[in-house]
Image 1 (cartoon, one colour):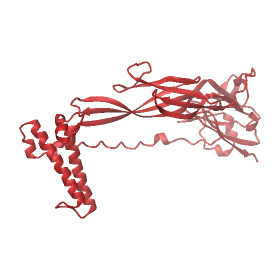
Image 2 (cartoon, one colour):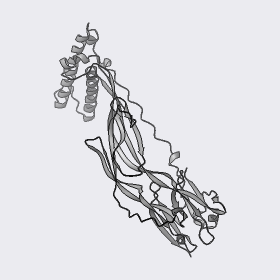
Image 3 (cartoon, helix red, strand yellow):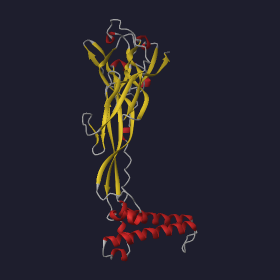
Image 4 (spheres, one colour):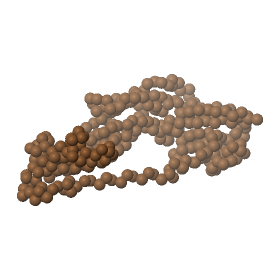
Amino acid sequence: MKKLIMAAGVLMATSAYAQTEVLTGVTRGKDYGVVYSLPKTQIELEIKTSKVSYTPGEFCKYADRYLRLNNVSPTPETYWELTGVKVKSVGIPDSEATYFVKLKDKTVAPLMELTENGMVKSINVPYSPDHSAKKSAPAAPAPSKSTNPRDFLTEEILMANSTAKMAELVAKEIYNIRESKNALLRGQADNTPSDGAQLKIMLDNLNMQEDAMTKMFSGVRSKEEKTFTVRLTPDKELSNEVAFRFSKKLGVVANHDLAGTPFYISLKDLKSVNIPQEDGKKKKDLDGIAYNVPGQALVILTDGKRKLYEGELPVTQFGVVEYLAPVLFNKNNTIKVYFDPNTGGLIKVDREEGK
């Protein structure tokens, strides 16, 4: 639940906020006000993988002889596949960018909405509780029941006196199913249905039988999807730094684990924000509401040969901190301010003139 921290003086503000959840403010010495933080940027890598488990079929040795299936392994194995990588910037509270909003007699006490991590989200905006977390998650689909190929074997196949003979008969049954499908599709079968829906049901049933019997030769591969999350905090530009390592046997492993192949990240400051020279003043001693003007960075992720990602992302460490003047929050008008909680940057500023 996101929390609103606001000074007690806001109770005397406008009636528009009468429904707002109110918590008491905080004090620093004799001053009364609100403490909040600005975010700094982390680069988040969402690494999507699949864990593949292979179980050989009982007739795997005869796959090439009867079905011309090449390179069918008789050995069970488990391995990992890298299926995709998403890159984005996320904000976390910056311990070095914590501010205190001091409330003065000649200003309207601001209603500040903070995230659950204490980062500024909005000012003078009516609070709307987020009920999304309370919504029940959709039920996971029931796992599909695997088909047992032995349910389709004839008496002749089951009574065969050797594995080789069984494999030969099962292969013949597969070819018979293929001939039946071709006959149905060409309208040459004795029992070809005139109804399209009925034809689809028959073809689906034949496809299911063929697939189940073919897996007795080719084996079965089952996949388990898994997502790994890696976060990097860039305090400076990066050039081909190891972001993570990936192993076909172990999946995503630690950066120092040489069992995995390295993936590299580069981060270039695009100098999109003009950073002024220091004037000797401490930023936290300035009046007003602090907010970030994030810079832009070019992010490139590679495996050493090809690019997996290239794009621009906001990075607050490459930007500056600016301030909304206290005069904006005087008694003659109400300023509504919307911040991006991910970057601490301004999204919109609205003014409501006082009567």
